[in-house]
Length: 218
Image 1 (cartoon, one colour):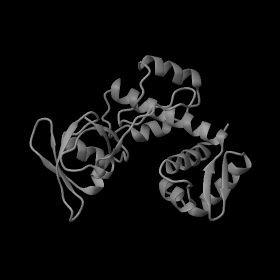
Image 2 (cartoon, rainbow, N blue to C red):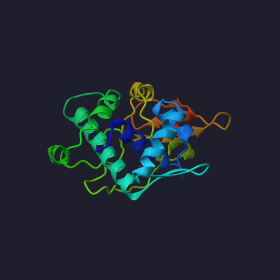
Image 3 (cartoon, rainbow, N blue to C red):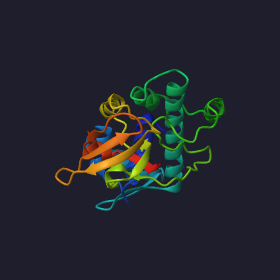
Image 4 (cartoon, one colour):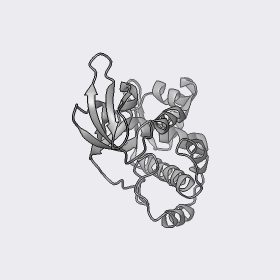
């Protein structure tokens, strides 16, 4: 059995490895809002348990065992978010903290029954893929909205940063998973872009917001 802190560190490493070859102590500390010295101590413990490989100056990687644990945590988290939104009527900006607590309930039977109850969903309310019970993730081809060009027509597939502020901003503009947008213009000055939904007037999105939206061809 792992402690909640150990699981949180493993999941943080996994999240950082999605965009990088290695995770570094400073980035893990920022993600977990803790001290770098505390992260260093924890990484030593996880390395002793053969859950991570930690090389000074080269960062941290998960072992196969560590990755399997991370995928279990991600599966539980995203399954609970789906349950809270689809069955209990929570907003997609309200579920992260609750799911952070529920993901540490280590009952495979409970999650398997929850999976069946929800109809075996492949994606959570933010568009993130839910690993299956074997840790496999459904692949799909997406790109960041910020990389799109004028004239592109795309569908929002996922939100890569699920902070409450961003989700509320998207709500205010009527944007959800599945929303179809056409790119009207990309502004060279600041990277912002004007987009038009299928129905309604065009509006502007900052480069930072469009960077966090994963889209696929409409």
